[in-house]
Length: 472
Ligand SMILES: *Cc1c(COP(=O)(O)O)cnc(C)c1O
Image 1 (cartoon, rainbow, N blue to C red):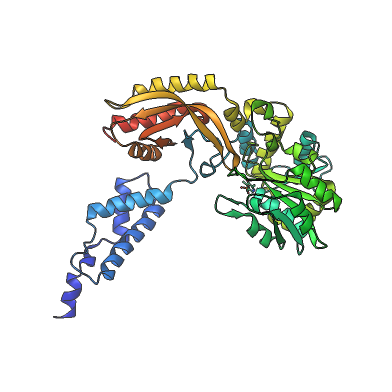
Image 2 (cartoon, protein in one colour):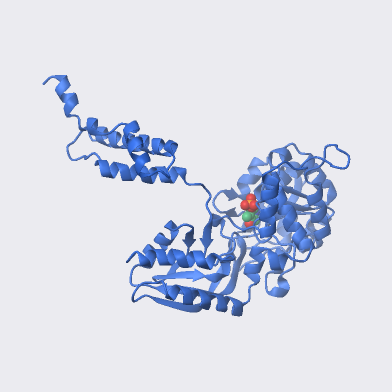
């Protein structure tokens, strides 16, 4: 057999070139950018050739048909070209859903970001003197006014705040933590690993379930730099447990002239205990109970942008600001604009009305029920034949590593459908905007608590889109 004939019969030669595939697709999909089609075409053709070669040209390995190839490239191009992150509708009822970007910003905060983002700003300029200004001066002044703290600081996120605090105050020395507080949050944040990176020697005390003041007392030595308390943000311990409260821990630390740092995780600047929320989330009270420093996230219960806020004594905070690491961990101007607006909202006393996360958590059951009934009436008109729309009370969590074990009484709308609830939920995730629902007992469940203004219409349109097209 001559080699030419062999080349001619190689079925891979029937595959189109990248250029031809892109040219054809551009005509059929004018909305897809050429760069994305090119990348997707190259990938699809390479994959087809590789599959074929890997099988040694075995006859059962079929190359994709022209139609299959076109569909594959169009889908791939759409995936690459689509912006990310995209707006979605959160109908899970979980106000702080880490996978959904945690706290949505208040309208005013979003507007402040847009304003600063699209132009120049006085980020580091004092307009009175014309000299270099301090990017954090206005923010820290607001934080101090709000909390009564001696000093304050904000960095990129709470993990950065903890890293900076430990590196500044305890590098090369020992930090004592209860074994029950060596937490992992969301897979990528582990307290022992952060401590290692901060160059701190971790001294664990107590047992997983019980730690006593005497355990800390015994562990304190000449190398001890500080006592750390970490909030168990995403789990609760029950049963035979004992934890040293902040006040008691501060007493132990005080006897040895050591500082106490508390990683609160999720903190608020309004005391919500009168509304039934755990008192420990109120950050300023942690300082009054004896913490020298407390750090928490900007985008959890506070309801602002991603940020790590530190409140506390002037001297350690000044040292943290002067640490060269602070430059690497600093807050960007967009988050700064959002956080500044959010703090202003707290100072004005408007937070409970204007900060979405607080509104959602504090929303009354009768209002939630009314909203659920209104949504159910809309959905009943668009679901399929034989599908039922039901309204019922339910429970939801706050989420996002906040208030573990604390459940919210809520109201939900459920679609009891003749097709699988999972497949309906999957189709809802493909809608524009995507709608995230809960699935339980083969019901598709929408919790109205986390629907923002006007999102009922998007949800209705997504449900309509599924059932109008026939069985999902
Ligand atoms: C959420 C959380 C963190 C991490 O905060 P980020 O702002 O996501 O960096 C750290 N510690 C605790 C206890 C938390 O709950």
